[in-house]
Length: 145
Image (cartoon, rainbow, N blue to C red):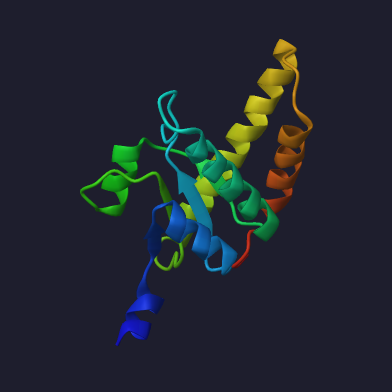
């Protein structure tokens, strides 16, 4: 019964599957490895990440960078490195997911404050992202209050 098992999946792995889950509004949270893009990686990879981030903002899905590729793979229990993971069914780990989202949002705010203090110019898209991140904290799609 493939449909029954598809409903039980707790997460999806890889950029293609994560993007599909976001587009179909199944993703509750998206985590991308902070070392997914390196100076040696092709430009298309950074374009994929930026389009994924944009889709997440459109669909109001929390998006953040965390863990390395190998640590992300270990966290989800697979033996090969992962660039991206989307939580589809947070059942049983909802408090931990909420905490992770809150920590990521508070870190974004602190980072923005540090950038302002240092006098580093901020792009309009990053300030817009911070404002939308603060708003999304309360109304992340699919999370009960």
